[in-house]
Image (cartoon, rainbow, N blue to C red; front, side, top):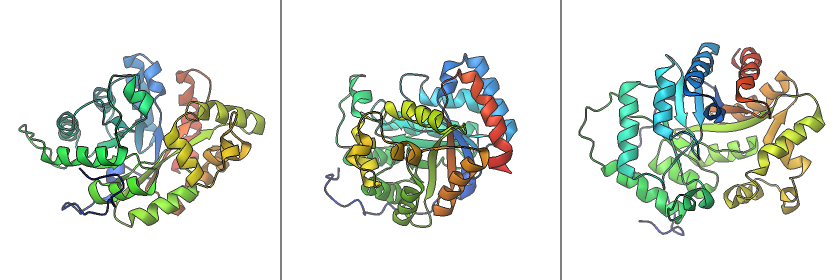
Length: 313
């Protein structure tokens, strides 16, 4: 195990990165809102996302559906869509189980599953009775254990890509050296450019971008602050925002207008497309658009429909 203060530049022997086509395209969706729908309705919604032409569907893992069984459910309802965990929590299952689950999905749904892994957050880990330890060292040891894990079932034709939830430079280096790329969350295009510089040309970079689908600035700020509120107490995100150039005063109260508009795009569909293009121009291989609303999950499909011609055209 590597001490967190040690540089993570030690190279892994597997340095052939997957082709960018494994992500399915440049624009995907990020949403855990399908958790609120019955399984049958979630499957129908995933099928419509597939038909709309989005490249991928990313979802988180917290207190809703379990990551790998959820991925299997969504994959079984679609024919083209890439499904990605964003992220599967490494503290709640051992590396052998994660390796076996990822290989099983890759074999069942060739070239349609992306494994996103992350350390999550201390409260989310400890509430489940696990010990939250040094993120960098723990992630490195976990990846090494996955490499060494035995899997005696039939091997998938292609290994699923591994992307790490990476915000700071050291985890980005780990994403480059021991995985296939990174999946940053709640970041600006400036962070995307810095992440690409650290990763270099080979690794995959799939970034999440929250959007508030309204032309009313006050409504957009309200939606953005409501969305960011759950993350304001998480040290991982607070530290990331400070590294991205925000100040302590931006993180007080419900968050400054500068923070809200910097992290949550709003305005017309063309305004939202421009923010997506900024990430792509900065080096992202895929932008995972997360629509922020306060309506029922069923209502999100309307926004996904209206954005599809603009973002995918």
